[in-house]
Structure formats: C-alpha cells, structure tokens
Image 1 (cartoon, rainbow, N blue to C red):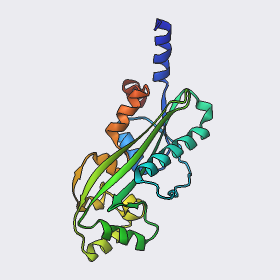
Image 2 (image 1 turned 120 degrees about the vertical axis):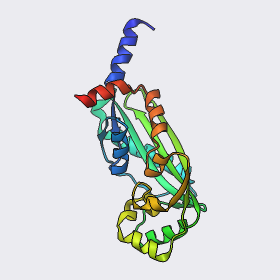
Image 3 (image 1 turned 90 degrees about the horizontal axis):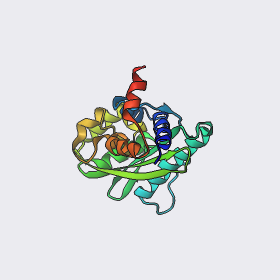
Length: 217
C-alpha cells in the first residue's frame, strides 16, 4: 500500500464519529464512562417479534434495524460515521421477556425470574456509513436470581425501576441486590457488552487515542 493510501486511511479513522441509535441512558452512560465519544440518534422501529423468532435472531434483527434507521437519518455524514444499534432481552425457561407493559406484567416477570437462572441476550449491530461494511453479533450473560417474597416484589415495583427494563429489573440499580451471581459480561446485563463492542469498533478503524484527544478539547 502506498504512503498516500495509508495517509488517507489514517485520516478517515481519525475523523470517525460514533452514532448511538438508542435513547437508553444506560447505554449512553456505559459509553461515556469508557471514554468513547458518541452522538445520540434515537430511532423508532417496530419491535414486534416475528412468529417463532428465536431470542438470538430477534435481538440481532432489531439491533440492525435500529442502526439502519439511524444511518438513514444521517445520510449527509457518509464516510465519517459508524452507527451502533443494540437490543436486549431476558430469556427465562425459553420465554422471552422484554420491557413490562404494565405493573401486572412486571410483577409476573419478577415472579418468573425469582429463584432461577436466566440469560440476557444483547444484539449489537455496527455499520459504516460508506462501503456497506456491517457486523451483527450477540452477547449472552447468564444471571442467577435470588428467591423473592411477594413483599419484596411489591417493594421493588414501588421504586418504579422495573418498568423500562428488559426482564423488569436493573442490575445497576436496586435490582442488583437480587442478582446473586453472573456468568459473563456485567455490562451486557445493563444493555451494552462493552468489551465486545470495543473490539468491534477497533475492527472498523476506531482510534482510541484520537477519541481521547477529542474528549479533552
């Protein structure tokens, strides 16, 4: 490769921006705390599950749909941005648990998780807004949950925390007191597997040193 070509590649890498196709404050906080600079472009996609769709296919499909939707809204930035989409669900005894639709739904989810083991699936989709490069992966973390009394469930519901969380709990919040053990990535349970994401970003040409310099300006 010629010196000119190498210089062009380096310039593109240093000008890369990351667009997060999510309004999730948890995902944004994970990125900020990791020193990864990004912009938010929340999207609206149909999150209905297809007939007989597995959890793996479901989270991958929605993650990609969110990334594609955000890319469409940022067409003018072709060649200068990576777009990240993510989706997370809880799977317990073969049942897929998304965000509860009501207090009754949340109560049922917590009873279902009580005293058992469940898996948290997160789909990640990263695409470059030029060259059509894209990657869609999945991370799974196994979570052991404490046995909850009816009163503990009611007290937890009263905090309001369960109602916008997949599986009706937040490991990083009050719900963390009920998680007795995890096998895998903690951040995946929050909603964004950080280490897998960082590897993926590097594969797409992300420059950590440049991001750090931009953050200090």
